Length: 136
Image (cartoon, rainbow, N blue to C red; front, side):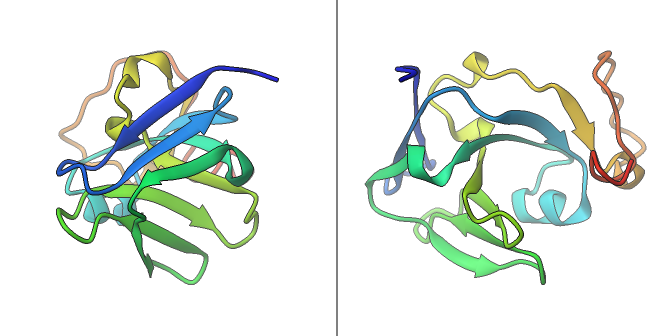
């Protein structure tokens, strides 16, 4: 078993979590829903299996943000915490910015770049997809 442990939580500390193992994927998302849900021009997500994620203090409130997914957030401070797609309930994305040590996860690509704000100039060499990896 991989004993890599990632811990994190919301801004006020009401919700804390622990994910065990390496993330399945880490990406930057530029979609409008992530932008609006976070208040930031880009959100970095680390994907874990639901079996390896546990909430160690409190639990996030959830809301259906679209017809394909639920988002989790702290009901006390509003921190965006999770995204979980209906198509694969065994996976859950954690906002990398809420990790205690976000430097331990590194993005590998950019998604939904067709929705990126034009004034954000991210100059990295990561692959970029207009939408999802599967849709190109």
